[in-house]
Length: 48
Image (cartoon, rainbow, N blue to C red; front, side, top):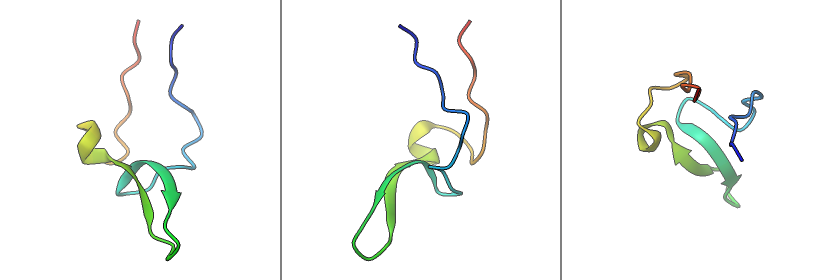
């Protein structure tokens, strides 16, 4: 089974590659672009 990147980037911003959720104060948390080894909005390479 292959995992595919989600085309709809609604869970991303300039800091976070994937926003998991928000704190009670409204601050987002999740996986950053840096943790993924990518520049913000860099396209993921597709596996062939």
